[in-house]
Length: 114
Image 1 (cartoon, one colour):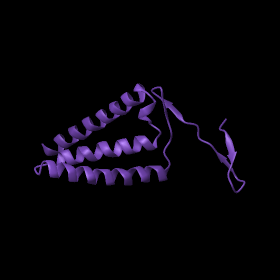
Image 2 (tube, rainbow, N blue to C red; image 1 turned 90 degrees about the vertical axis):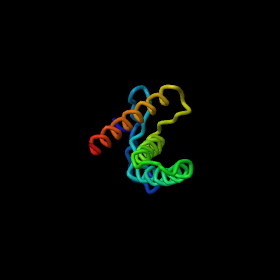
Image 3 (cartoon, rainbow, N blue to C red; image 1 turned 90 degrees about the horizontal axis):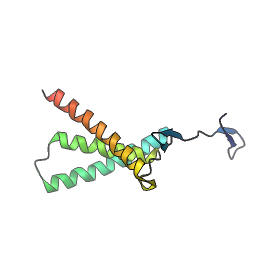
């Protein structure tokens, strides 16, 4: 049974319990959290692209896109409750998901370039 609590206006609201996946607690992100993560990720990505271009003016579009995928995932993972300070397991899960996303991005990039 889903726990229920009362909102400030007196209506009953169901509280969604956190998910347990791969031994790590996750929260289901709301639309607002997803949007916030995307906006924060976009800002961090722009800063990262500026730093990459300053360090190496011949930055390729594939590298910029890979940075976007990684920054977006780490921003979304933080909103989903993936706290890297809680131990080694959340860190390994986060890095594993990032590696899978990067491998998919790289495969798609090379497939489209061929």
